[in-house]
Image (cartoon, rainbow, N blue to C red):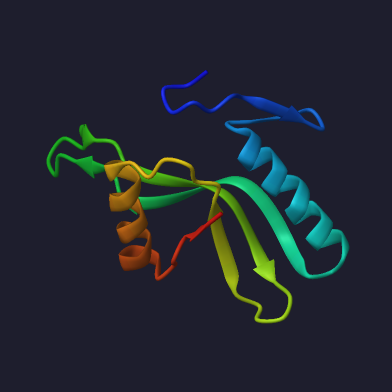
Length: 112
């Protein structure tokens, strides 16, 4: 069990960080089969801050900062990219990454 009480859950051979995430994956798969959504993916990375390198040597100073979305898909009615996070506990780090997603990519994370 994690420090937030989540239990890893396996569904169709895939491992999820929580039961909530696995349940949402199953729901989204049904929506895709019904033609409501398309391009369903899980664990999609978004770069929030690129890696920082020394200008002279090229040495890596700081790795890139990323947000990894639980799910992304396109809504077949609006054609918009939807980014979802199966969220239980909203940490300060998550809140910051959510703001950076909106600022850098113009994407509001949908919390489920």
